[in-house]
Amino acid sequence: SDQLLEQLAYPHKMLEYLSTGNPLVCSRTLEFDAHTDLVEMAATREAIIDVLRCTIADHARLDAREARAARIAFARERTTAHLLDRIEALIP
Image (tube, rainbow, N blue to C red; front, top):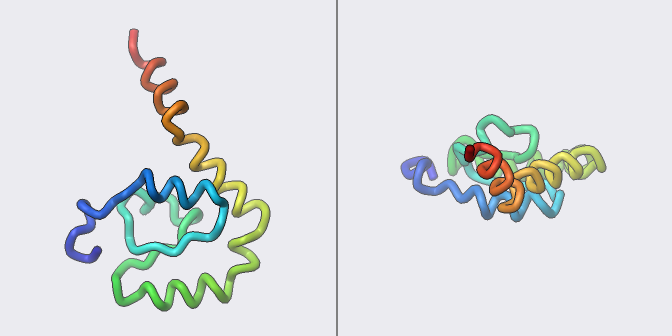
């Protein structure tokens, strides 16, 4: 992921994971640089174990109702149906 950052973004798969509401640990994904409140993201491959450890240690906060709801809402706002509605609204 350090070398192929742009090629390794799988936003659809990330949305599937976020839709569960569970805390998510991942390698750096450009699509989520602006959403670090939703995912626990390692900046480098070497950092993933530390991020996982911190996530486990902070699980109670990350798994709180509000945090789970934010992840689920983010995924719901990006379903195919919602995206098609947005595109349709742009078409004259």
